[in-house]
Image (cartoon, rainbow, N blue to C red; front, side, top):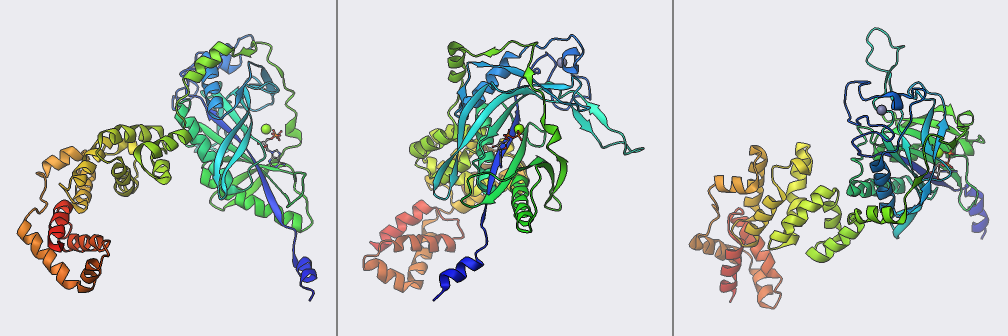
Length: 491
Ligand code: ADP
Ligand code: MG
Ligand code: ZN
């Protein structure tokens, strides 16, 4: 009986991942953070620039008040403590798209700290700490493509230089790629609700660097981390982390060591590649920015910003479950964006049965939108249209089958539900009692066993019969009428 010894001989060291995320979010101010240039995306290259954001000697930055407010609002939504005084600092490094030779950021005294995001995990909810949220300016953009005559050229667009960002740095408390995915989804949802950013990964207004290390389970010290940069979707970040965990474990198990470095993810291959080692890149020689005053957000200003804080998704979901009698899951689907949640609530308040509105959005609307590749905001059927259709089903005026057909027509014609409902000349639903009675008789005759069970007291059989009758009528019967007639027949 030496199973114990055997087991320990074959047990290999088990590794656990440690993940920390750095997320940059672009703030939706009209002008840049330290000058009055426009932040508009997609302007011709190098047209939104001035001596300040080009870094001309002697040009002086002035802080955009709105950027500070937006940053603080997002930080509050992320449960952070706002520091009354925060300090801008110069982060020095050379890069062609950084004309000043330094980026204005915040260092040892950031705008906010001590926050957290709650993410769902198997066992319930987990708080992942946010170390800090600080303000900084974006750098320009190097374009390495689009030169047909030579691939050795790089063009620089400085429109983005000086666009306001917040950097949201998490504690190394994320313990799986799935958790990282959840953290990012929640973060985006929260920031979207505050309205301070559009969080578009395609346009670069949300960017994430993922730091990852592994350590033997139970060990206290962290392993050496690598940083994965420039991954452009949450799903790819999850995949890249998955790959990187396996790679690091492989290296360690085969006797190697992890080098601290920045790696790039190739989504086509599903692999990460070393880009540059981080050791030398590290000394930014931060020092306080001499051209800017400390940012002071006093109690009065802070309170004013706080008043602009909208209801956040988590609280909103809880309230919606309560108010409309919908499930947690319904609430989750309906709060993917603030716009959708707002529209739903508007419709739900008007509808007879809010739960049915929620169900229709999920079962009939979402799938059709997805098939068309459009967002809820572009839906031909508005939330009010959904509410109107829900009421018609609720009152038995149209059947579920007819609703489906009408929704299809709405999408074909690009028109809202009430319009198509009118065009189709109101219900074609059979309210022909004689025909329906005949169907009911047939169904009852065809199911003697079920009828017996019903008579013996199994009242749930009623649902079975209604289903069979609806099917036999090809969905054309009015459920209300079916119920009425059936009740009569069954006594
Ligand atoms: P750096 O100075 O290299 O940028 P920071 O200490 O600022 O490192 O941390 C950057 C991010 O990396 C943070 O999100 C942090 O939680 C995370 N992090 C730090 N150490 C580790 C580690 N050993 N493994 C995984 N993530 C880490
Ligand atoms: Mg860092
Ligand atoms: Zn400018």
